[in-house]
Length: 630
Image 1 (cartoon, rainbow, N blue to C red):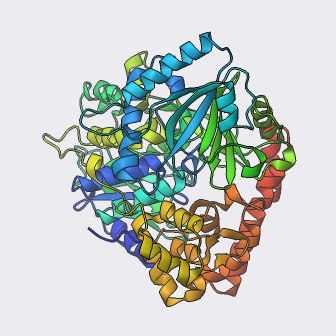
Image 2: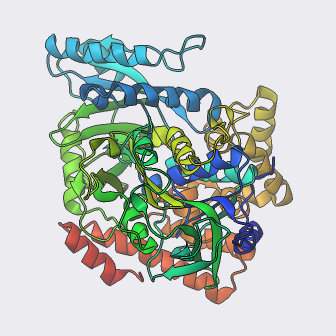
Image 3: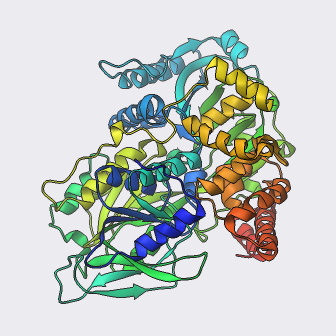
């Protein structure tokens, strides 16, 4: 297996390899969209031994896959909707991530569910928790999470003093993950298994087989071009929680079976798609990629991409906005690692421990503006604060908010020309857009792996037999180390002055890949120092983001690798100057390019923060446009 390193030279080699594909030597599968869904599809296909490529219009996880609630969970609210299959599947995937696939990235977190009544609510919620625990049972395996337990008013106040409660609550376990880091690690693992990956490479058109061919990739191709761009990522999220939002269709592949029953052409009958036209945003050069099958994993960008194909078939997707805020940990008194989940009038409220912060959300409102730039408004922030203050003993103020972010949930709608409800079941939807191309939308962050397996099975459905998915037993890069032994821990503490909190955070971010960062520090000891303006991070992490994790812009590093968009009140502006100096040599930036990158990052942050002072989405978009360079 390869190293999966994504440095600038690797990106150049990837683009060269993609451009060398031809009608005679196509990829088996090309994935458009580098969010968690698309990254999962690339990994699933690569581990089956297929020839795979993946491209993204922006950075990996630059859409919803970096703007979720960051939960890996079964979804209690789905039990109330009697969606037992989805909950059972999600719990299975949660435990698989915790124990096998990504134990270095996914960590347990406990929640309390405060009760509204001492008897009826305890009985009703308690029965649901019992079922939740039962669904997580896997014969022959140990439980990944402890059983739920009931807390009386005194017990709950002891565990969570900052929570207002009269009737106690129920404590249960789930898990959390840095959604962007999970996505980046999926991409790197796919590359380690042979996939070819290029970010900041939007699809501008689709290649069609000539009218005289039978649609095989070997036929001649005619391009269908447009000024449109591919969506930035898979944008799967769950209805209850930003990244675990929109539930669109079925893990049992009911959508796939419906299209399969119509034959290989399905609803997307028309000229077969045999590849795409792509623009390298760093150089401006355009090239073509040939593929036997193209999978659109573009979330809220799906309809735009389907239009680019020239087909009238495909999925209909609406966007729903979910926002989250972060506040300092000391503003809410609670035991470490314990959060809150409760119901609101329109959504679910999560108060989630996140390192030295609380992550609080979410909302669920229609988004009718451009899907490229979902924005937070003052009204959004006030709504989340009001929901949180309804259950907290000490109210939060607007001045407590460190940061805020918005993500868009892709909500799948029934096809306009079909009343067949089996096409869009409740977990995720897969639909043929045209022969040689399909789209996948919906689902949950937690179930990305199952979605990916279904998407690849759908793409290969005409092949008999086709290789089976292997991802259930393929750990992600870094998963082989989740603890640092005592002697090594002491050596690191002595050499660099790092405390246990610092070491634990590094291990949760990198696992066994931490050794690669230590190698960089051996070469340049000054990289062991905290990053100015974002001192919870080390300077070496910024360098590593460029040399190994595919970052090519300042925002890629600060917002999606280091998460200053969540943890820094200035969203990383102070850290930007030190960071840009660290990464400029590896990215080949001269003084002019470095200054331009710094200006663009600062302007983008200023535009987003200005939008947060407006009242409506339309006002936010207008303010953002006036202040940004977009």
